[in-house]
Figure 1 (cartoon, rainbow, N blue to C red):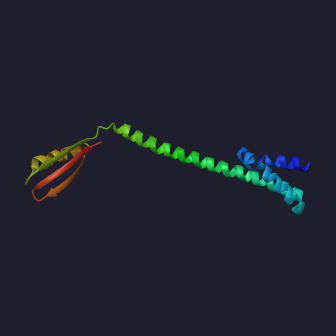
Figure 2 (cartoon, rainbow, N blue to C red):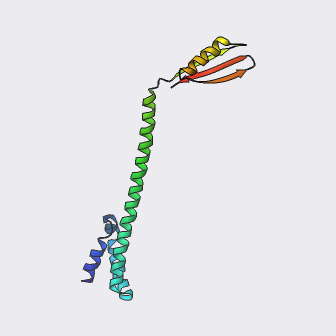
Figure 3 (spheres, rainbow, N blue to C red):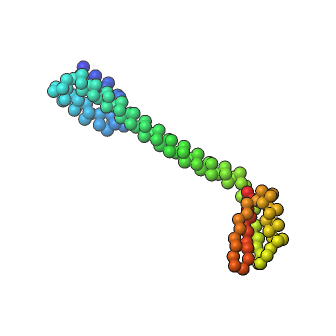
Length: 132
């Protein structure tokens, strides 16, 4: 009767643990039951088995959550690249000295929604204009 109840309590453990350590756990619980009481050892097997299942489930959920997060980031990056379509326009404009025509062209591009950054050098000026 005792061995049968211990076998039932061992069912709380995951199958892999039962197959690997089931006989040792049952023998240890049976041996300790003589000193600590059979009910205490049966309950200990049951609680430890449930704790092992909970620990493994948490590890599995963490793995699933990590994979889901990676897939979410990768899909977001792919969506961003697809939304841009790889067609960002870029123009480099430059001039030496005073450049009213080029400055007017840069101002026109900015008003059309381009983003222009200016580089001043001793020999002249340059602009990098990008439209997404």
